[in-house]
Structures are given as structure tokens and as C-alpha cells.
Length: 423
Image 1 (tube, rainbow, N blue to C red):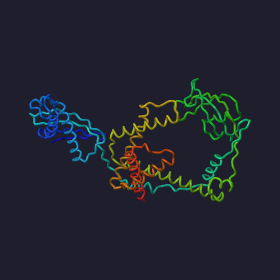
Image 2: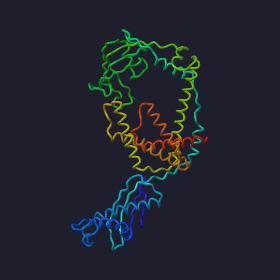
Image 3: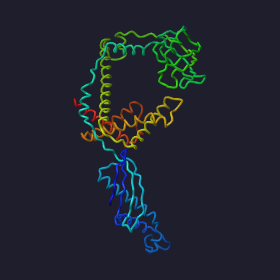
Image 4: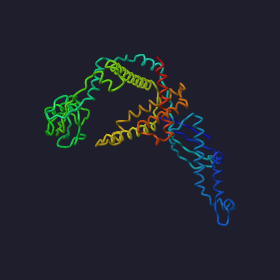
């Protein structure tokens, strides 16, 4: 067997292989013999018909293709092992006929997508530098106050009132928006209940609700700002029709020992505030850890040489588009983006996701950071138990996919834990 190969962009290899006449015959003859043994002729049991008659009944084209398929599969396996390649997609094969006169048993071309070579930068140095520059985590009294205020607001007692709404009240409204006389997407027949003055809506919207009471119906015009997140609404004049369904006065609970004892195992207000501080501290630490991890990966990717396989990017992009569509449907969005727009918008994110996974894979390989089988088994059990407790049992998940997912998560965790030791 002889072959030549050529590396193409996007981690693709193009090769041409030739098997000698005898080499191909080693694959062809067993297939031919098998077909010969199963020829059926009237008056003869299978395999007992005269050879010259039986040979005429064999579908030689079918035999050739079966033998060629086996020869190609076997040859590619040898080439893969010889070059330490790992195929990541079905190869594209083009087979030539045999040519006994040229002593060519089989000639074929193949285009292969292979697992890419990842040349990492100095990831130890990068991780060490970024970790050493981490932010000091502090919790201010103002942050504690905001957190407690949020809790008190969430426990507020609402009382329906027959008066004009003012800031601080809860307004229950039904509304519709119109641009140039046409329904505004996402604001047709909308319903919401919110605290006036918190700035949940577009600037100016809540100010127009203040001063109205239950059953009031009215209209107003708002000029959308030039930096609005939706480009097609920037600097647009939007007409709103609103009906007030209810106005509610809020009475916030008093922060005292009795209140905190009712929401948890707290002795007094002071112990409650200590708990709030610890909770905020842990939350900030988690966010800072995530920020550092993302920054480390970003810098390692920049400092590495990675040829992203097209097939990997396409698969990741397809999954992202599918997830986005499902998410949009759950939010009951009226208009769905078409695939072309989604591909354009998500392509860079897909490339970054592939690059991230390749970097994590290569570091785990170099540092031998493979999770043990008992760790994976424990991870699977923990996942299934959590799913059952949360009311979303994972019984329908394919066991193989679940194993791969948990294995991958644990491996990535080990990589980050290793990088975080490089202080």
C-alpha cells in the first residue's frame, strides 16, 4: 500500500492511496468466495452448482464495491494509526476501478477531517499572571443595605387602593404599543405588574402611569432613545395605549428580630446581616473566579496556535441555533430570526467555544488530568439525584451522552483547579 497526503486548511487532510493487485485481491477474493457459495441455481443446493455456472451468476459489481469498501476502511485505519490521526467526521471517498495491467488493485482519494493539532502557548505563565492580578473581594454596607431592601420589598404587603397611582405603588396594567400605526412587536396586548419608579420600562413610560387610577384608559407618546438596544426602534416615536387594572399600596415589613426569625434560623437582626454579608461575599467570589477562568482561557487561546476544524464549528453552531430557537419559543417571542441571521450572529461565539474546548482538552492531555471512573460514577449519581429532587427526572437521557457530559465537566474542572494552583 502506498499513499500521499496533503494538509489543507481547517484541519482537513487530502490523500491518495494505491493498493497493489495482490493487496486488493486479499479483500476481493473472500467476498467473491462468499457470494459464490450462496449462488442459488435450480436443481442444485447452495454452494454445489458447477463453478463455471455459479461464477456467471455472481454480481461482480456488487462484490467489487463490497471489497473496495472493506479495503478502504482497512487502509484508512492503518494510515490513521501510522500518523496518529483521529477522524472527527465521515471521510469523503472517491474510488477508482482496478487496473491489473498497471498492477493497481485499487486506487482511491479521500478527504478527511481530523482532530486538530493544538500548540498551546505558555499557559502556566498566563494563568499565574492573571490569578496574581485578581481583585480583592470586599462587601460594602451599601451592598448589604440594597440586598436587605430587596428582601423587604419582596415581602411587602399589597393593598388595593382607589386613588391615583404614585411612585412606590404597584401598578397592574394592560398595554399595547404602535409604531407608524402598526403593532409594536412584543408590546401587543401586553400585561404587567410592577413598582412605579423602579425604571423597569423605557424612560418616560412609568411617569405617564403616575397620576392615573384603576380603570383609567389613556394614550401617550414616547420618543425612543438613539442608543436603544433594538436598532429598528432607535429615535422612533411609539404610541402606547394603557388601561390601569389596579393600583396597590405597598407596606414594607419592619426589619426587626421577629421578622428575621420568621425567614430563617437567625437569632437577631445582627446575625441576619452577618449572613447576608457572607452570602454576598460567596456570590462575589464565585463571579470573580468565573471572570478569572474566562480571562485565562481567552489569553491562552490568543497565545496558542489552533486550526479550528470546520466540522466542529458547524456542529457547535447548529447546536447553538437549536438552543436559541428553543429558548425563544419558551419566551413566546413573536418573530423568530432565520437561520442565516442566527449563523452570522453566533458564528464567532461557536468558534470561541470550539477553541475553548480544544484548549481544555490539550491541557488535560498534557497534565494527565483525567477523572477516575469512580469520580464519574459519583458525578452521574449526583446529577440524577439532583434532577429527581428538582422535579425534572433525567431518566430519558441517553446513558452514553450523560457519561460523556459528566466526564467532560469533571475533566474541565480538574484543568481549572490545576491552573488555579499556579499562583
